[in-house]
Image (tube, rainbow, N blue to C red):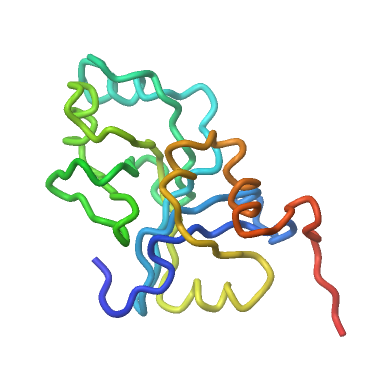
Length: 187
């Protein structure tokens, strides 16, 4: 757990066109922690092709029960084999962390069991991997072309299809993403 003041926790980071890192093309990162020690977020803007929740449950020998075969998202390039669930605040497990009162984050198998048994959170998104930044790294990146932050909104996580989250987040901020330049000039 991070210490100190929280900066972007509960917000979304949106990758700007031309940021220079293909792993984050049109990325939408739900920021779960950001302080003087570093930052951590979970990507919700891209699905992992041909991977659904049922395959994840089967890997852990969990009966799929009532769980729909929901898509699994690319959470980020750090620890791509580690799973995370962003979910509504109506469920809590042994490691659940509330994120600025907007959503919660869980990363242990108990939430997968709860979802399969129909006693988990009412709304959730599963992701593999996360986006992480060391001490001061994200702060430095935010001073250069690459990221744009917008207010977090659980509706964007739970009610908006992954393929439209990037565009919708910019639109909610009053920006037409079609007008964004993929490079910056120099004076």
